[in-house]
Image (cartoon, rainbow over all chains, first blue to last red):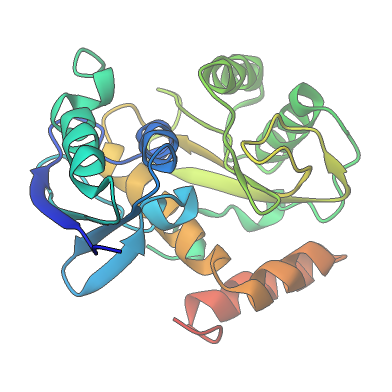
Length: 95
Length: 158
């Protein structure tokens, strides 16, 4: 089986950062793909399909993260998840 | 951020009596009010704000853990408390499991970074199965306090 890997740098644009609701939305979207999804922050790599892991990032607005997926639908997973993050998880108008 | 930076020790509850989400949140906020960390007259508004947040999606994040929270102008710094339920609470958790560990957080509206750091600390420590198991088994506030202190000094893994 071909081991497809997709990778992209993403920046958190929503004011509140990677708090509980974004973590939930990210996990839900990521879980719909067969590919393994990981986020790399500094020297730490976490599972993008685990809310607990996502919350350990403590990533604030403006933080740059590396999004990585491995599996047949890796590219689709990275594209969809990057779009979610770069659209501010749909909460750009919240204070 | 450490647990000791935001957990109001006298408000820790080792045996939550209530068994539904609204009552548990009320019980924990009442405990914060009784400790003096929030004013009695603000308690009802804080409970309502936390419940409103729960309507957007449960903060029961799995592994028997919930992090009910809200921003509220009545606090000048992030505060929180810990509640243990031995019988478990139906929290509409994301994994459908009952919740045994609750970390309730109230933060000032203009401090999103502090809230993120508290969530980071809680989630990081809860990845440790030993810490999680010991907390769920704790039967006194002093036991919980000791576990949080040990966690703050990194006696459980990372």
